[in-house]
Image (cartoon, rainbow, N blue to C red; front, top):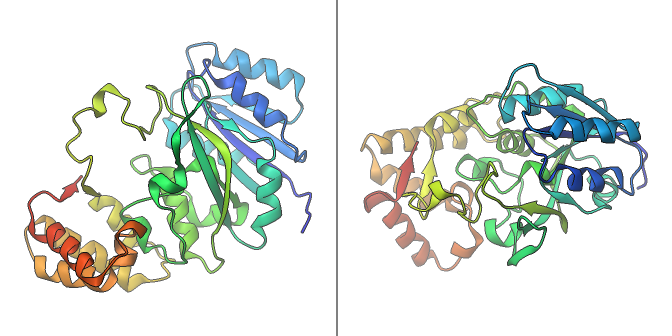
Length: 313
């Protein structure tokens, strides 16, 4: 159904002069015209803010501000979201490339949902698509209505989501130590309205040495990361999820946190084994592991009884 509701784009910048102009062009040229572009610059020391001012002088849809001190990317996104006035809000990074029909397509498919997200390509420094994998094929996007899979992993990136402003009251404030897009996703999956996935590539997600995320391990610091092929367990994050007051499945969330907390202390391995055997497709969601029951049990056995399969933060 066609709608002309205002859509806000919350764009956060920090020393992004290299790719920012190219990204801004894809925003101001969106086919959906009822937009505002809210740019929060986190005290850049390069020419980023000069680029922003140049675009703002040409386009009335842009409103920008510059932090007097560096907040970090999570709190900067919180501030940018707070300045948005649209019925829907898209999060935006400074170095990606948006399909010009992205907002139009998301608005036409979101319906009554609180959050919709889409697929993306990986691009390099020159904007060229990397390989044949998309975000959906690399991260095995979740198709369901439970938030439990997002306690251990996340497939919904901030650049790919659009959410209703009604969702803001459920996820603010943001905590610096946790990824903002992961938390927004966990919250959205806990609410009554289903999250919608649009299976279209609508962003070129740029990979380079200055990216916050490192999907292709191109950063120098990633070459010898010991948990590359392990399951990462962040106990403070699990606790935050387990204690969220709007949990749709509070027992499962609390049980997941409790068992992994005890497992980290060397306790109740068998209890975790039984729990994962029963709830494997939720707690450790991965379509590639959906083979036989025997193969699942063998995988769980390795997780619970072979050393260092879980990496704790």
